[in-house]
Image (cartoon, rainbow, N blue to C red):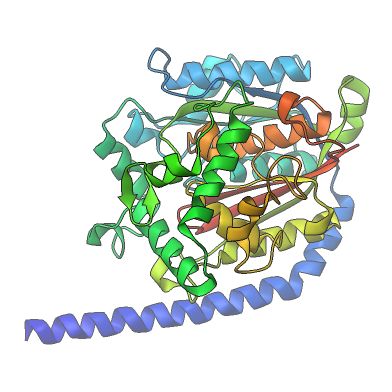
Length: 429
């Protein structure tokens, strides 16, 4: 009798899931059908500029608290912008409750930044928390609700054990169907890597080339957690984590924060002497949280949809970009992301780093900051830091890693195995 009830429960669960997938398909069709009408409303939206950026050196910051780290980056952004006040604030943070036992970050950070009384909101979308916070800040300025908005991101990850950090990060996966079975993110991305290798002939060496490229870029970033170069041999001989991924295929556990100041373009023209950088496109989308629910383990549907929406808003396409910052939490992630963004053909992502296409000096440099792999990955701050790298590049302030003639750049930030994604497109001038 008990087994019959269990089988019945499984059948009910399957039917509910199938109905959910059908509803999701209808929602996507309805959204795409009405998207032109949504875009037409942009005529009444204000153009938005990034006028200030701030970020601290990322790493194991044991001597600093989470609030210290955030305030440091926020004050740097305020100083860079040259503003004497902010009207609203968003704080991207994935899981401070598990990492440091602290929630209610809107109140906390406004208090310690010395701006208590302004509206301040904590934003969570797993590892995409910073990118989604940026989108919300962009929309608040574009709508006319506020003129000067601070968007920050922060995570303090190294005050807990490795096991506790693994658990905290695993909350971004499906608890009932993935975590309960013992799978973690290295294992999930390892399955994506194996499938990509099987379907498209991607090699173990091509995965390693992504890490080599990003460490090469990161070696020129003074704020990176791991500013050193690695070789293909070092990657291939590093400790195995989840076959085929090794430790040098994986982004690290990091403490860090990043912040930007947004305002209307017309205001920026009057108050800033720095080269103008505008956000001209913003897109966000979701996919199934569980990897096994997707038709194709290697295709990041949310990234593809979010980028399509951002490109449509901006009136540009992938071939117009001069650089991109993407979510390389694992080497296979960068490969799948650049395919979903349309920077390379589907199945050809493995060849990009190997051929030099995505390196500095290549056709489309990717992760000039060092990416999550070398710069670090304090999960709530990553999406904001990606925007900072693009802004620095478009200003011409990226130093040794400057992309010559950069005028258009993209940032892509995602949560989990791609269950949520935020994409932004930036333009100089």
